[in-house]
Length: 537
Image (tube, rainbow, N blue to C red; front, side):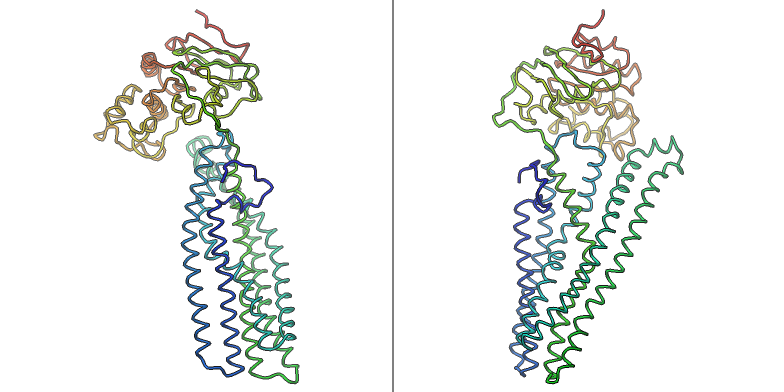
């Protein structure tokens, strides 16, 4: 499928990979076949009762229905496993190519729900949901035909009316259930978002509000979710009550109708009641399936949004970057802060991005790394427009240290080696020491292989910042971008790292609010005024 394509007017099911949709189609046809064979087996049994057939035909028809049912059910489980793999693969490809500006807090919450609950839930579609919504309605239809064969057209028509009335009652209860469950889905998303927010900022919330007040916000979301669940439970109870009546109505109505007939044969009555009883049984499944379908639809909607997120177009005829890494910024505008920014940055420059908070410093750096395309203007490296360079090649030429350091669970070496997956242990340790991580390496016999805790919790803020600097150093990229990369470091450590940066054969663009005397920039892009000018001596 084409990731990021506009499919806003299409069904969410079309967001699934084409191979997955084809497998679901085959399993769906299998469940329809199971319904037909099961109805045939029951009809043969009813005819055997009324016509005193030998048991051989009954055993043959029953055996065929059982074997096909087992085969389709097993195929459903296997298809569910393959479906999950296809969905995870498609989601991964889509997220890898989506605009980074799309990853808002709400969208990250949706992705977490999709990966943790939605896709595992999709595994039950072939074996369970398709059985409920294909086998359950098809079986009564086929059994009505069987009733006609056993007892005649008039009885079949009465059975049809009774089953339709039962389905109508289910439809009305399901409509009420859907309205109640829509509120539950919203409350669940809000609660998930609040939980992620709480976990991500636990330290801040505890220190700012204390352990009790820190959970007040998330408790409000949990209470709203509890209230929505309570309403859904009441609606679900009503739906189950209606389904019970729906299951009884066809049998009671048919028995009453046939008993009132003067010429009713007792064996025919028993055979018809058996058939209509089996036809009414699946209606109970439809009554309680609304919740899973609502969850499934909501998950498909979220999956569709994630896999069709806006993407940066890759060039159809990509151009190769030259060894000249001169950067040109020509007439860049990107709302709401950047307007008509121009600059020429020769290779090897030390460039300070200057401006007050909110002036667009981080936005400009993100445009240089093509996290997004500017609304107006062009950025080139070595004379090649960024949009004419494949994202993979561009990323290989740029190392980035973000304002908020990101450290993953694992070892110190694992985190640093992200910058160069093929780096040896010696290269990792060298980069770590150049980033002033000596004390961390030497304090454990495991050295660079020591664990850093859950998302780096065993490290201080300054240590996490130095890990991200080491990650950038080991990449040895010709362009290094630092966004407040030393904000958590003391002056001595910062000076040592800056001295290391001066030895690099790379263009360095940096943002800092600290003393720049050690940085010695030879160029400044000032976003408070016009632009590019030399710093004061």
